[in-house]
Image (cartoon, rainbow, N blue to C red):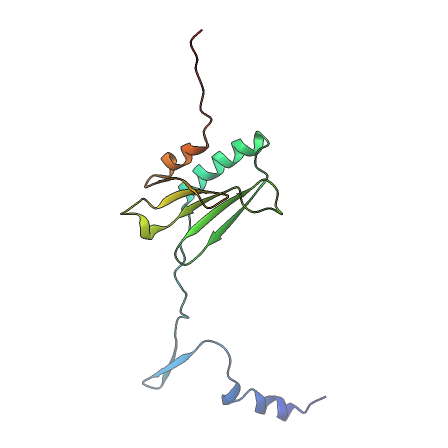
Length: 135
């Protein structure tokens, strides 16, 4: 075992832990830790995505998903099996909002299937097209 004196000596000024503090007129004020900005889906966007996801799960086409929130983009990945590469990625890249649109659906091979500024329009790529024929 160690002596209590050794423990208190180790937890002195050299081994300070906790939030950084700055001295202002003799008072210690905590500084907010620097949190990097993260791009995320909003609640309405997730509602639209999960509605399409639920339809595809009910049809037996999709089985799993993953959501990634990165510094410059948010990604909703769709899997047929959880051990595979994603079938589709629904990406939100705010940097592209003025040029190509913030949303894109990317296929398994990296091909951009649809891109646009409105998520509802971009998600129409997953709708089944009905072929009508004249008889």
